[in-house]
Image (cartoon, rainbow, N blue to C red; front, side, top):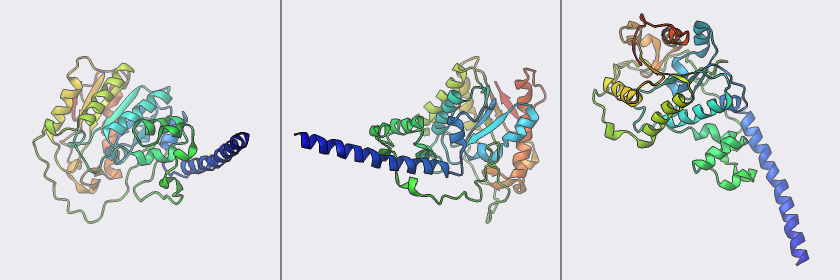
Length: 318
């Protein structure tokens, strides 16, 4: 019996030593990522007063450094291309947990697919897998069924195939500025620039329940944390679906006295009908992003400085 116990102890010791090898793999996987924004966030390195959240339209269309210059307070962009409102909600919780200076959130929404099924918008697990060395990230992966609960104790249970991909290089659209924004300097080739037809209808029964809950939860969390929330609908080359805009406003303002400002871009600006300012039909190029960022900076500054805003351009609801 003693011999068996000794062998079991020896095996356990060897296994734990072997398990530490996977810790090195995970650590290395985290360090080689070109996008370090979530690392910076959980390491308490992002302490900006304004945080931009959303998918690629947040990342591409708003330049956080320019907003800092126009408002006089710090701004950082945590928009992630291809991400859903559920992911934005997760990032918001991390921002609240780690950013002691947080006062304002700018949530950039996707007209009209914010709450609908979309093949291009997902919960960005791929941004979290390499960061499982952070216990709070690993716990989120466990919660969402991506990692086994034993991964709390064993490094080997946190590792997946992608952790061994050590040649990850940023794509041509993945340049991240120091302020976290990812504007695009070129135009996508082969665009015909026909004004894409977007249905004027919007079917509430097509909304994904989990997305709607995440959206209303996002708004509620900002409210309970006394964070002023700006919900921004950015320009597309095609005209916006106004029924979608009305639906979002209804979800936001069904509860009175919410500390939320809703802003639809200035549809009268001819710049937003000019393909020279777009990367593709859904994303501004950097010259367009500078113009739209200037518009947003001009709009939010009076609210931040607690002054009335009577002369804004575009549409605001609060």
